[in-house]
Length: 196
Image 1 (cartoon, one colour):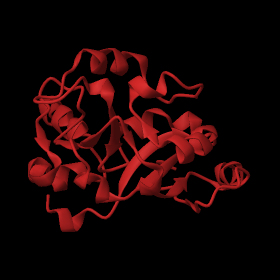
Image 2 (cartoon, rainbow, N blue to C red):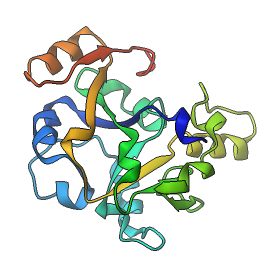
Image 3 (tube, rainbow, N blue to C red):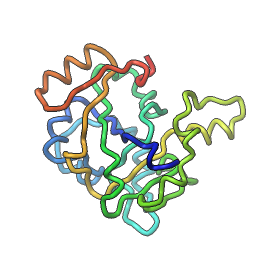
Image 4 (tube, helix red, strand yellow):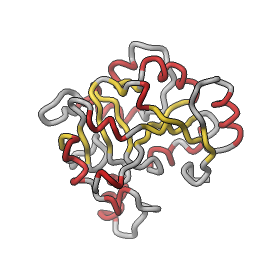
């Protein structure tokens, strides 16, 4: 993938967390544990992530994780929460932050590749990552496609709030909840993103 083709990154979050994010930034799992917050994380995946170390870096839970494509298996698994969650749009400028890393698939995968962000997007298969659908009749291809949909950008400790540019929500109920927060961010309804 070429950096010129990457205009946004994404963070899936409970709408209720947005005011805190705009104060503290998008925090790593470790830093977020110090604050009261809601979570969309899947416990089994977090157990895997807790054991991972980024090659040449720190533990995976010490990185804030952003998706290269938000329309992915993680968001699909949270479909029932679509009225309470949003996808925050993040500037790809985070790739220039010290210690940022790119993965070619979900960082919890045993097969994930990690590269420093400066040149890391070259390991991302753009066609698979942005594919409309990851299903496949071949089980191995299904796993590969599903993992690639969750390619990540990892940022040490936190993504500063100024990198958060806006939000996408599933429907008018989620937009009303988001708008009621009174933030400076604009939320756009994008049902397709949320598999609606």
